[in-house]
Amino acid sequence: MAIQLVNLGNSANDGTGDDLREAFVKVNANFNELDLRDDEQTTVSNLGTTGEGLYKEKVNYDLRFKKIVGGSGITLTATDNNITIANDKVYDFTQTSVTGDAYVTKEYDFGDARLKFSNVYNAVADLPSASSYHGMFAHVHTTGGAYYAHAGNWIELANKSDPSELSEDTTPVLGGNLDAGGFNIANAGTITSTGFTGNLTGNVTGLINGKNPAVLVNHFENMDFGAFSATVNNMIDFIVNETDQDMGTITSPTNTTVDFGAIAV
Image 1: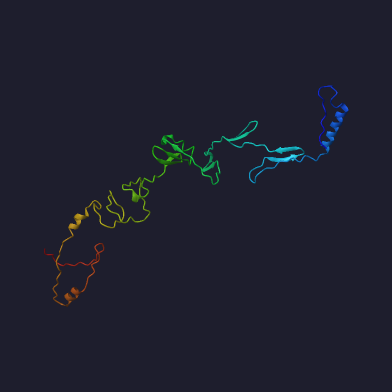
Image 2: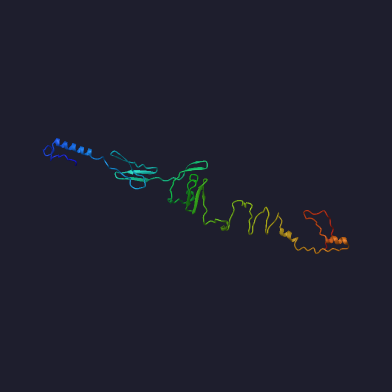
């Protein structure tokens, strides 16, 4: 049945409303009506297929919801009608501690998202401590270069406008000894040096052990000793004349003494 309303009359004690008995008859009837009705069927559903739902459960007539708690760097601000979720975290990517050579760092997983940032400093002197920000990359506007922090120093990266290979550098200068690792240096033009150690192949201009080889060559070039002729007077002279004699080498000559007489000039 429908809920019965108690007739209150037009004013107090004017006799137009329900008397006390009639009024409480209606009150009792209303309580019976409510008691006999089906149990409360109100419920709540979380919409969507992704995300975390706020509704937790229903206990008797109590609908229970989860509370929203702000995580690290998240603040919640509530008004009568709204809850504002804000991110006030400034991400700090610096190392938190160092153990030997192993850096224990904070990690932030951005997934496949693109991270855009401008890390520009006006001058090299404006860069932060390379020791505190080991591995950091930065751009310096005045030099137009890129730098990274390592071993307490800011190291400038090579610029594309700078020669990236020896073939691109027309005036290369070494900062130390060149170790060829046992390999040859081929197709060289003029090599100028204060001294050489080892074997040289090709034309050499300059002094060798303090001597000019060009002067020594003059003593050996264009010298004609003429032809050797032998007078054969007997068979022994003939045999000697027709037999080649090995006199050894200049550094290891034989012990044979031969007198060919004087050389007429």
